[in-house]
Image (tube, rainbow, N blue to C red; front, side, top):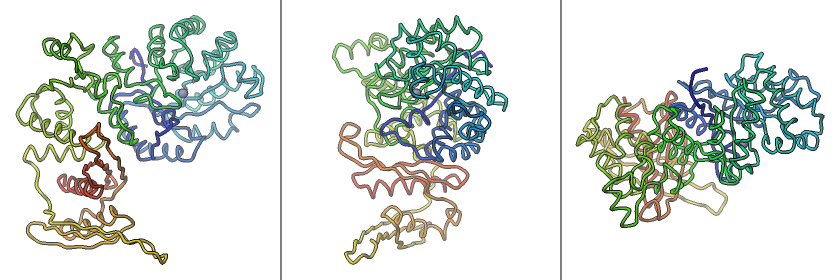
Length: 521
Ligand SMILES: [Zn+2]
């Protein structure tokens, strides 16, 4: 194991999806996993293969991901009582996920063992030890999540510690203490973690907290102070009830306040936060610490004056260090880092502070004001950069499009029709197509028109389509934002459109998707 002071364990894809209003498709999960890896998260928990077939499918697909840093973890429980571990179907599915890491949870609270599991204390410990040992024997790094650990410890420290000892004896790489109900205070976390460290000094200790007392981050940080070296949490704190420990807050605290290097590019934090919001189709939480829209917004006259003289007078960190920006005097340089990174990916070296970088940023800010968001739409941002740089070649000229929707009363299924009129190098094309919906019809008509000129677009298809109505806070008036994911089977790219009309917003995102593919050819 490397000398990293604290390992980041993300469970957005598993515990996060227990939260109300946080749903992810298989494709969403793969895209988030890829981003988490790029950001420098150490462990990514992908799901519970024993709980649903969708998660089994995820692990099958996840094998195609190119993860440079993160280790993928499958989550599950200990074997059932009075069942041999190699005969337990749920444990077998954990191995079949073929992840380098397996995380299992077990019972630490005597009450849960006797009243819920209805088994003996001895059998419970055997279940933990056997399951960990079995997975270790099959070459897995095993992380043990001690469910209800703090509540269990308060009831019976001997019993709770004995369950940890069972996991350590089985060969667990880390013992993670869980505040499953979220009711523990930081002072209690410190005391109990110290007791665990004293009892089992040789096995690394981790922490998994929930936010029911608004203390999930505080409790995780408290545990680090007394020797925990793994923090489990989710991006933006998504999760059951009031949510999980918010990694989006934990990470800058570790890196900026405690001087622990946990991620290579902290300045991409805000982008990661918005990406997960956009992919899950959730609004951004403006008052979020560090990365929220208002995290460095100054309104009071005196504050503004002071902050203009000396930013440090009313700001606890440099906003750009997490990819954020001061909200009153948007300096020419702020916010450029994301653009520079993106341009770098395209093989274009932009100087920070150069006129072209400034022009790109200005355009991005104008469009963001209109309701655009580029965190999950890298394809549209790439097009914008190409346009500003002058390397963009228009692949087609749109003249007009038209859509119609006909509903019949005689049982005939509804008909959606789209007409597209465009030209390529002066050669006109006019096509009509019928589709299952307006967007589908437009997509088909556009392809039909372009196919004779660009046969390669036959391999491009729509992978995802998301619509969000923006309220008056994010934009000046209620508008529609459409996010589209296109794929050519090898890679996928996101594009975005914003308009008062859902059809026009869809059209912008749709054409950007095809346009980008042609630019890259
Ligand atoms: Zn949890």
